[in-house]
Image (cartoon, rainbow, N blue to C red; front, side):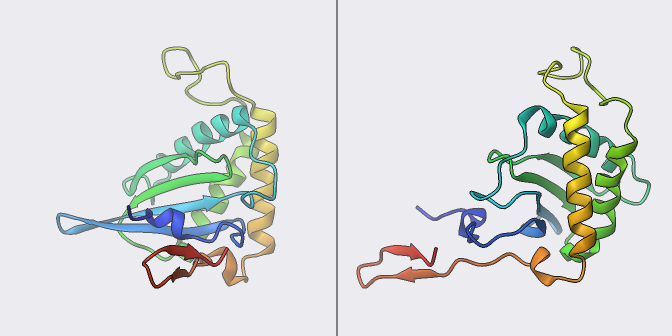
Length: 174
């Protein structure tokens, strides 16, 4: 069975950043999935579940209300490994083109007085939120993006090389 594209990324070398995960072409238009990685996989502690949930609500609300981007946003949601989020947009832009949007989104969390959409009618786990920790993670990631804006590694996935044996077995360099 073929590995899906996101499993072909060398997770031992990935750093926090903004990456193109995949581009799909659907009926004449493109849809791009971006990896918004806040933590180094398997090295840093994952994002607290309640804070991750709050960040999902806060950033999704920001993105879907941003005048320049709201019509491009298809999806914002957490990765199962709790190290970041997936952003799916119409079109296909280079990760650097999203830098300002993502930085503004994470900075906006500092001003939040409450997490939107947390009433029982609006949320499947309305009691599992932590605005204080969401603010902490958002500030940490925004500061990281600012400090590393000139480093290409925060915009380019480290690719895992497939090594193939004579009998067709696939191995990776990590």
